[in-house]
Image (cartoon, rainbow, N blue to C red):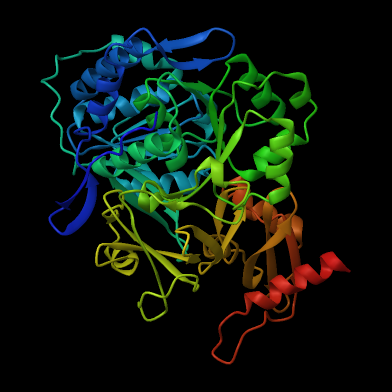
Length: 530
């Protein structure tokens, strides 16, 4: 039986945007999770390993207790509370506690360097940080973070909650337009930007996933990506909490481990980037385990080659694949591709989600005819308000209620969006976005570097790897090993270039002085073909 389509209506959000919304929706994220858990309190919310399990009653009970302890420590509505830890049960307890009391989540990737983490904590004015023992050596000095009042380690969180005062909290006060999270994403300027996501943004994204996928209540997903990014937080944790389902936690991704955990927990869903699917196809464990329960494999972040899709259909006949396109600035999904269309439309990222207003425009901001390439702009209740403490970047990226994606797409008469190119200089390493300007800025600090350019080198598994072209200063010397070590001190490991061309010849530029990265990319292709 086909599900009834939810009612839509236009509403004024944030006092300035008239957008199409779901008429019937939860009041905020905390309300969404508690309402979904009602009647299913004994059902598992989190699973891990052989016997690890946290039921909804325990998850929400611990979140309530943590919220009480945070209030006792002086945390108030609007305070920023960060996380810097791996995928473990303390993470959702922490973010639910944030939203119980109206605080703002600032999740950080464990791959960040100490310098990068210090910038995010300082820029967002984080008051409390949840980390773990494995990260202690990377924690920035406290005198560099004047707003940070306390660091809680996940291994000690239960004792910390029980070891101090816990005042009874007043009833939850919902405000869907309040700031829920600041998720940092690097920009072409090289400085990370904090995307401000309100509760109403995130709730709409969860409802879009729920409606598009059609998964039954109680479904299970395996978290194969970092839970700190927009996909891990919204696509995985919050969508499956909405379904009263379970999120299966696993160690950092390895294909064999993923396959074993998927079989052990009889998952219904997993989100992965195409490179992860390919690694699973290459692993012998795939043939040794029963994955027949796995109904839906969603993907994004990079195109899925048609050959991958065909091989997955052959090896895992019960699995349907669904592509999607989104961004942190849109709380994830802008377009989702129904699984039934994936085999015949491997080049499409999907059809616009119900509440999205998607247009394709030319350089002058004029909408182009169907099938004509242009920049994708999107408006809707899931679009962020802007960037935290960055008015210039907000004005540049958010225009007339629309977010300018910087991606070149076409939208055909069939209503499907196809992604063709990126206007921004982004290297897409297996779904991890590496902004070349950020890497270039870090490498330019090396005393021997005169100029540097970072481009993507094609890779058969990851899609691209970062390659750096370096021109040395006259009379200075350096090699790839020393510059790479310099980079690792300043950048996350995945952002560090994996290929180097170092010399004394100036990098190619046009008559206006603009760097010609296309020539550099062509050089890499020519080398690969030689």
